[in-house]
Image (cartoon, rainbow, N blue to C red; front, side):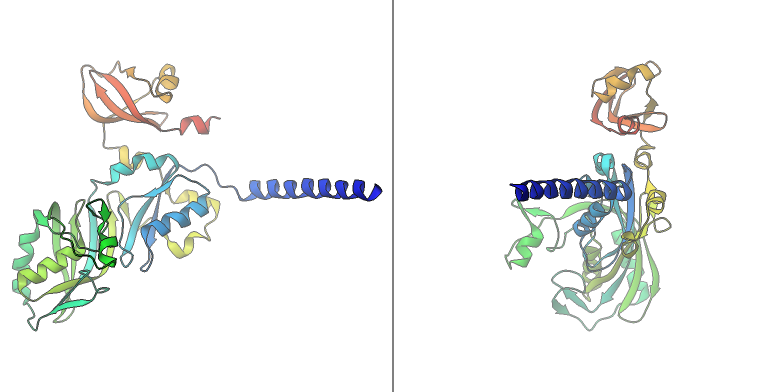
Length: 330
């Protein structure tokens, strides 16, 4: 009987001790509630989804996503949305992106980059004059056939799944936009470095392939690097290797606010009396806007974004409520 009481006491003591230690550890390691964008300089050899999972572990948030997928072999900027910023990922879709990459003439591959199997060889090497002339045809709105190794869906399935299984399928060309395309340098007879600024849906690998076909010599891409993405650039980003060593202050210093993607859209300051109304997803009349209509707008309070929605006849209808002000003041 005494032994049972002693055993029960020890179990309770151990339980209390363990709970205390865990609580203490939690307060020491818990990061602040983060809502914003963290830009990662992605290395080669890792997928975008894997980067998201690593950031999730770092910031202890279930709400983490990314804008603009990068191929595993590509490097450069990968914007990561954390917390309420995940509700603004759609705003990255129409941002212009800048890529620098190498085009290798003389061979094409089944993936349109250097990771694939060579399926065509040519002895021809284009002159600089012919390359400059050919590049003019790829500027502006053009039709582009996506690579088979891509995330595009074909009959409800991802193209890369069909490709890896060796299944035959044919994707359809899509309209894309290339704002700028320029030659950085001609490395040698076979390789040339290019820079492009493009819109959504553009595949650098497809551009290299199509350039080779236009020049009649085959080509594929390698060393693809994204250097700019809308307001994000390499000046303020975190290298993946440094992510796990970042301390709280360093992490916060590298977070972009949600406002960075919203600032160019119509917006208004929310009146104090309308805070609860908008926070609950209900429409409000905007006195300062007379008979104005916007398909996309947002409201804020003391520079803290509250909701994204539309304005019809000076009435704001929220369709994405951002729970930031509420969390700060709780």
